[in-house]
Image 1 (tube, rainbow, N blue to C red):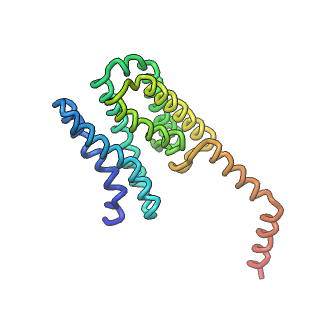
Image 2 (tube, rainbow, N blue to C red):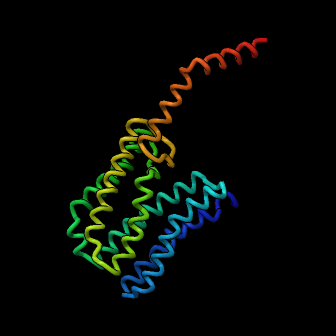
Image 3 (cartoon, rainbow, N blue to C red):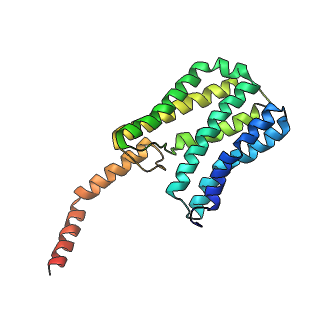
Length: 211
């Protein structure tokens, strides 16, 4: 039970459990409380992964919780923006439709091909998650219509990269950073297997085992 209820997993779970509070504060027009709660909950998206890696508590359950929490949280961000600043969403409706379409495909493709539905924590998507967090906060102080356009374009690029990784390399690790990183890793493995040094070492071990 201790391995399940780690602090990183609890932080991911809290993002799901307390998300309805944001809707409650928003619908009651308690915007200061909404701002504070959003800041706290949004921060857990960075803390859970950071603490999991720092304390060596990375787990499959944690990755699943983080993925589910992110999905509901960032879909909610789109709703919050529409509720507070509908013009920003309406001005970016085509980018929004494209982003959600590609996002859905990034779930569907690994499910169809490998019987697993999950998303990757690539560098592009992680960086954009930070941008989404600050965009929501900045929307209280300035017009973020253009910033939202940038966020959606980057999301589209990030999810397309994710789809290419799944199609080209199969069911890779969820913490894969980029297409180029996994491509380089695969090439290095092939080079290692084909290198004369590796072959000699392999032959030496085989010889020793036969003695």
